[in-house]
View 1: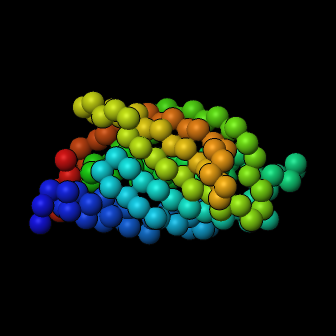
View 2 (view 1 turned 90 degrees about the horizontal axis):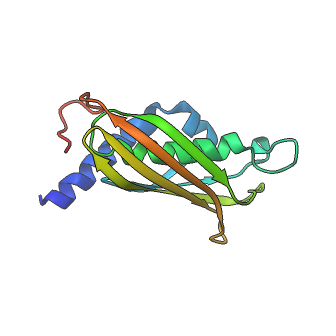
View 3 (view 1 turned 60 degrees about the vertical axis):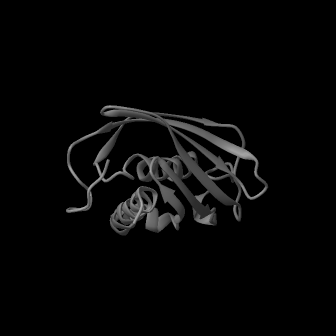
Length: 149
């Protein structure tokens, strides 16, 4: 197996384990579409129980989607990685029935810290959220016995 396939398999194993244990992501109906080293893509459908008092998707719901994408991207190498800082900008509302796609991409990985950008788009490819997360990597593994980089 080449390095690229090994890294892909590792990222998928870590994502599967994390999502299996993530009850909040399960409750929100978040689905994994793709994961690799420093990258993840997730989808979620906005339900009527996700709207706020203005009738639009609650900001906490979109934050949770972005944060989950961030978590899968920065933990993809099987080193337990924690959020150090996160910022979010909401550029447009999401509505009931919208299919949201969150794409997380590693921008910088330098020693124990990393910077990740997450963009959430709706089904019309309109950007509705920009999220930046700063991570801190520990030495602990997520899936025991699988070697990360």
